[in-house]
Image (cartoon, rainbow, N blue to C red; front, side, top):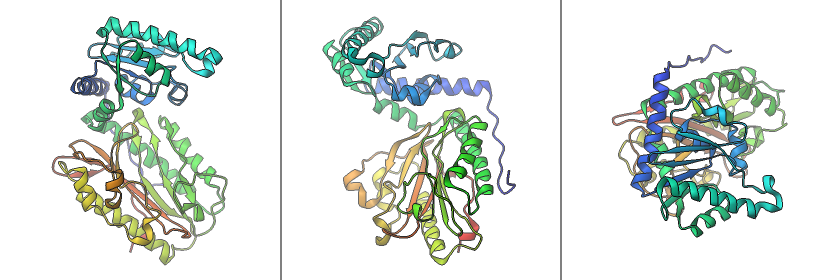
Length: 405
């Protein structure tokens, strides 16, 4: 591994993990109470992990829903685990009971899906009545439409569970912050390997696989996206990693999007140069403008600032780069990208919403700079922690000196 930038992970004890689990579960229950929700039925694997730390086939079960789900009340937590996997969460104090789930999907039920959904609703309704009583308010997420309708027909008031979940997840405990830092350290070490392998002649897929391999070796979970692109594929942004061969003297832009160690998100962006020559004047200009945007927006963020005030004070994107701008200015970050979204000034009226930037929020500050129909573009992003009297930059991997003025 390159000696340019290598970090060692921070110590985290079993007691820290117990505190982390207790904090997350308590935070979610507090938000449920504040929003008058008597029970939540969670099926998003990341949200189940947030509430309980139970981890199992996250992508599969989120796509095949409901096949694994959690009923959470103010004093009871019942995990309905995928058949054959019930033993995986026996050690977790955040779960009071484990039952075998019933998969109410077309894949599992075929043309009997309507019958299966009715059986699912009946079983869950009976469980809910035993736990909290009839005609209560249920927070529901990512379920078949027939399930929501069926629960309503059985007398429950069904509301969206996203609000309490996202509000709970947005404020991090000290133990969560240690986990986030460890996830970032693993990602930064993986980027060292990626950068060491970057040279003309390697394909985007090969380069990305080196990064992904290192993430898995360091006990990370998975990458949510495939956002490594080179040359003309860097403009516009969001072109996925592919078979393209990286040529000489091209920009190589990369967004990590790693669900890493302990399930925490590591999300920052860097842009490299393939060499062998120095970056061109245009490449340097794009890079420095993107860096200016990120640094300006980090410098205006403070605890207690409203989302609207942030948008008003955020860096004003020059006209020639506005068409290809990144779709938001900053966003929350925890176990994945999350609440809040902070928008550019010109987008606030159409897309923005207000709120308050709070202590122990972790945010990612974004920039993409590339002209419409331009040859290349630069992606930069920093992950930060908001504290009462300061902003801590969590993503330590340095910017590229060869680009800097």
